[in-house]
Length: 59
Length: 230
Image (tube, rainbow over all chains, first blue to last red; front, top):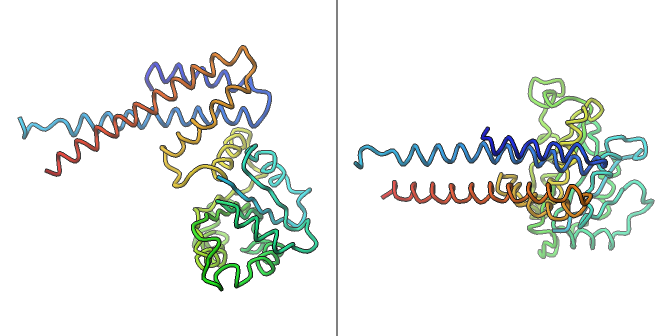
């Protein structure tokens, strides 16, 4: 996890813990999971871009 | 998107799962109706509700590998042959049909060789056949296994998964999930107490940035793949 993602996770977790209503807490916690998924997908896409760009046969 | 939720349960007040789901309903664009609380179905009204909905949800506990009798009664009374397909107008065509089904047995029971010995898809085949006849798009089902055993984190997750099942565009991809949250975020931030709103807006800005970054990377990747094809 990047530092930025770590920071975002902490912010969302704190905000979620401050919500009195169950459904509101649920929303922020679910957003936290989605942000983690975004971070993973970002990593994977970046990796694939790097991997596909590495074409020694076209040097 | 307008969603119609039809709940079939013979003892709704005693059902903790159904009460939980009712409390989890999204605040807008959802009509909720309990079938067994109607002595006799107003067929015109029921059919009209179906016509107006974009997504229809049938929600019930699984009783002997099927929906409770109340749902079958509703089908027999409301889904008349002429209405569904008889006059070739197909008023339900291209709508979506989702099934929210609660079970007393765990997920692993619903497979060949499992304690129940059949999949939920197999048990729900008659409803899927009705959907096909009506030219309605069948959505992947939303099963809730053993609600009584769920711990708080699972229940919190269930609230939003259920809301998304009712209102999020299909298929359930990262892209659609991001759009759903992006659409909900402004109102959720407005609901926060004033001292938390700045944090809410920061979170939204970061979330939007991540979303844009992913889109940009996906575009780059598509371009690379296109060149590789040459």
